[in-house]
Each structure stands twice: as structure tokens, then as C-alpha cells.
Length: 223
Image 1 (tube, one colour):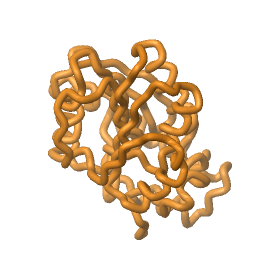
Image 2 (cartoon, rainbow, N blue to C red; image 1 turned 120 degrees about the vertical axis):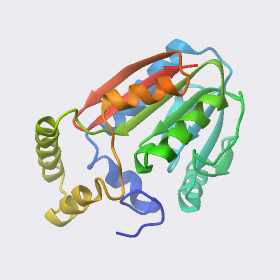
Image 3 (cartoon, helix red, strand yellow; image 1 turned 60 degrees about the horizontal axis):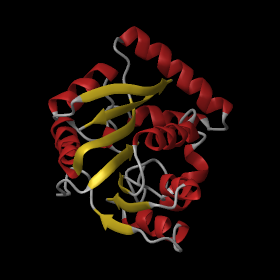
Image 4 (cartoon, one colour; image 1 turned 30 degrees about the vertical axis):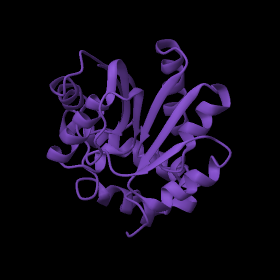
């Protein structure tokens, strides 16, 4: 399937479809916002990589005004949608993927929501290392990703649950097959254990699971 970005949907319809593909998608943002409110004091320099249409920034700015956002995405079409959504906000936009950008100690918070599972191992390691380097000391990296379960037995069960969710949320059998077929071909999920190991190897001094359900998990890592 060809789209104007690496996700399964074109940028102009992404928001309306993603909530019917990823269970509890809105909860990702709720967890991120709650964690940042607890951990960080204003003002905050926040980099959202793989920002998509800017939904996370939009939700943050509804509650917090003293945040300086930089939104980064490799898809120009996604950035265009984000600019439309946030046209009245003072936001910097960067067209780049996280394994490509080069920032050093600039941000208090970096988020990556559903963006690194498109990477193969060497690219993923480089992307996470870039995030580590771009944070100030004490900064927090928060990432939510598709995952693979720790055994084939558990993975099969989780896949069946996800297929059930997809059917219950109006996805056609053709769409369901498309999502399943992307796994291991266009997306490369890793286990929770592998996520934690990678974050620690990248230099983060504190790494923990923030949230998990179905075939998705969130992680917090402090520099």
C-alpha cells in the first residue's frame, strides 16, 4: 500500500482512521501529558519526532501555554497537516527522520509516538541515540511503539485480540489483512525487553515501562 508517509493512511485521513486501528490511541497522549506535568516545570523545550499531523502538540497546548514545540517528521504532507492544525501557534517545523537529525542538549522532553517501529535494528539504534544526545541532562524521552510479545504463543494471542479489535471498529477484512501483512515487512516491532535494553545501551540512566496494552507499549527514559 502506497501513502504519502510511512503509515497505512494518507496524512489527510490519518487522524480519523488511527483511532480505529490502535487500541487506546488517545490514552497514549493522556499518559504523556500527565507524565510531563509531573516531571517538568515550565518553560519546556519539547521535540515531538514523527509528529504526524500534530495532534499531540495540539492537545498539550490546550492545557499548557509555556511550551516551546519543535515538530519533526520525514513526511512533508504530515507536516503540512500539522501546520494547518497549529497555524496560530509559535512552532518550529523540521522535515527529517529521527535517525537523521543532529541536535545536542537542546530539549527537556522528546516524544516519539508510533514512529520508530518502521526502523530496522541499526536505524532504530541510531534514532534512539540521537534522541538521547538531543536531550539536556535530566531530560525525558517518552516513546510509544508497536511491540512484539516475548514468545510466539503470546504473540499469536495478542494478534488475535488485535484482529478482534479491528473488526469491532469497522475495518474490512482486506484492511485487516493489510495491517497484518505490514508486520515484519514495513514495520519491525520488538519486544518490551528489547526496548528496555536498547534504551539502556543508548545511555539513559533510568528506563521503565509507562503503559502497555494489546500490541503497543509506552516507555519513559531519563538522561
